[in-house]
Amino acid sequence: MGKIMQKNQIFSSISSKSPNIPSQFDILVIGSGAAGLYAALRLPTHLQVGLITKDTVKAGSSNWAQGGIAAAIDPSDTPSLHFEDTINAGAGLCEPEAVQFLVEKGSEAIASLVELGVAFDRHGEKLTMTLEAAHSRPRVLHSADTTGRAIVDTLAQQVLERKNIQVISQAFALSLWLNESTGNCQGISLLYQEQIIWIRSSAVILATGGGGQIFSQTTNPTVSTGDGIALAWRAGALMRDLEFFQFHPTALTVPGAPRFLISEAVRGEGAHLVDSQGQRFAFNYHPQGELAPRDVVSRAIFTHLQKTKPDPYCVYLDLQPIEAEKIRYRFPNIIKVCQQWGIDVFTQPIPVSPAAHYWMGGIVTDLDSSTSIDGLYAIGETASTGVHGANRLASNSLLECIVFAVQLSQLAVKPQVNVDDTRYQSLPVRKEQKDWSHEIEKIKLIRQNLPQLMWHSAGICRSQAILEEAIAQLNIWRSQLADLDVIQCLLKTTPNQTVQLSSNQAQQQLKLAAETLNLTDVGYLILKSAAWRTESRGGHYRSDYPQTSNEWQFHTLIQGDCWRKSPNITK
Ligand code: FAD
Ligand code: SIN
Image (cartoon, rainbow, N blue to C red; front, side, top):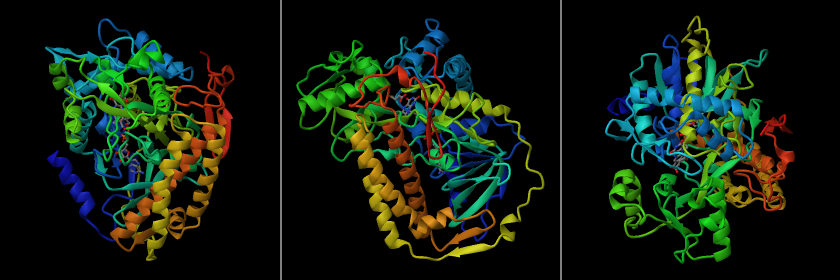
């Protein structure tokens, strides 16, 4: 930890006219969640790796993961049972080959994490596993209720010890740099130390996580603004299934509190979901009750709330069925956070309601984590590997981060020859001195209103008229943004110059503008995809088309402004 601080401080405090990072790396990894950190560790050590991250190293969903990581390693379990559960949860849209790959590599991934030093909970020598919704076996390994922190701490420490990896934090990837004649990805543009610079690399790996911040109700951290999806889409990469967003049933619902996740593992260990009258209602909606697939439980809560209209507008998780000792051992962080908001989980039910949690859609990748653009790779939540289909099985995401990041260890990349660190000095510097303050007020307004619009139009329940209204509003915002000088400054920078900003304030303004641009692009992609798919399936529920339709047994493919169906997926 001390080491991380030291390195971050060096990179974030030095401010010079020439950036203190090389102008080229062999490989750039964008994002320092489980996917980015693990990929950086697995890349061949003779390659110089730049690990770019827009906040501190540990900011991201991975660090917040609670329930754990799924893998069929118990003697009573098999990869084929894990395969079946994943396919069933995915509601007909999983890619069987990708799922097979994921479940078969599960035990190897866990062994590697254990070897690196991740301290999963054990009973004696044996790793302990819990049950989560839609799993037919207890197969979720955990480290109390802060599994993500245990993984990220271990991986970050290893990364910082690696000589071939340079961590560059508080550095915001703005766009992908494509070769004009080949179309290959050959680097990125980066907002760093009050400058916009272009960094060259033989390969770029996007590991930028999800986009929960597009919704006003989300369990995701502030860095989850869908940047990787927006960058890849604008560069022309093939995208898939962007309408499929997972809404977690149980986020803390207390006025003034963030939507802190109350892990599904709490229900896995036996907690009941009750309404304001103390009635257990989940079995009215599905035979598996509280442990039905996540989309089903979220919709059950949504429908039950609409029917009963309680005040406050929430349901409750009652932990009384779990032994107090077990609660203390398994959920120390949940106890602590609830206590901070005045809830004693031993005697009071926890007020909860659904919130946007995980984006199943993303940048299309194959088993090697390659995208449709040569030189561009994607891993973790930003990728669409095909393993989650229309609805992710709980705790499969951390596993996916690790299993698909390993694939990059085979990346055949030629080290950059003729390393030329005088490149920055040889480029003309464009000084950007404009005052963007009044434009920033407009951007802040859009940034504030967009997540509300998305929650009401593309949240748990969607319909054509509301989606179309939202698309019209979003298009107004997108064209207002396009007219702003600060956005033009972002879009018009070219690799043959460096842009020097006037102050740290200008850098913060540009970052807000870039994130808002990304959010409006991903909002547009979600809305258009949700309006396009006229059926209900997994995380995508349409009140005007409430049934799953065989005619939609396809992925949604998007490239530029073209939406089309994939070839039929065999069930
Ligand atoms: P992240 O961990 O989100 O990392 C993304 C990184 O990209 C961050 O470092 C971010 O700063 C950086 N970044 C983003 N944009 C830019 C940019 N423009 N420039 C530079 N850097 C950028 N899954 C499970 O399997 N099990 C669980 O128990 C579980 N619990 C969860 C609990 C919570 C509260 C949440 C929110 C999610 C949970 N999930 C869980 C889902 C899982 O945590 C995520 O899907 C997974 O961690 C994503 O990892 P990632 O590496 O792809 O992205
Ligand atoms: C949880 O702990 O409920 C989250 C697990 C997940 O998102 O996979």
